[in-house]
Length: 62
Image (cartoon, rainbow, N blue to C red; front, side):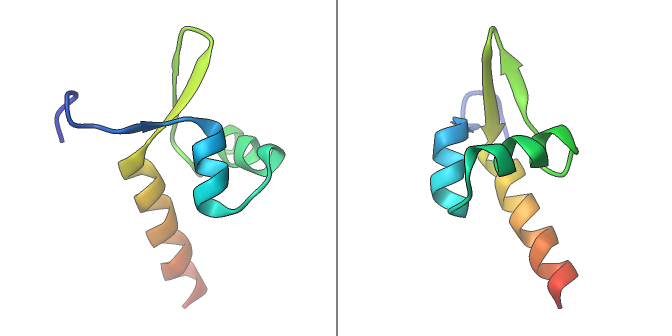
């Protein structure tokens, strides 16, 4: 993954993809279960980090 091709998602985009509320997404970020970065005052979640999170959750559920 290169910086130029990394897709950064906003919190509302993550909320929509996971079908979760804002507080839950921020709780995942705060607990470091979901990796994010801060750019200025904006929080962004790399698409790869979201995919990794989903894969880990599926693996734990099995």
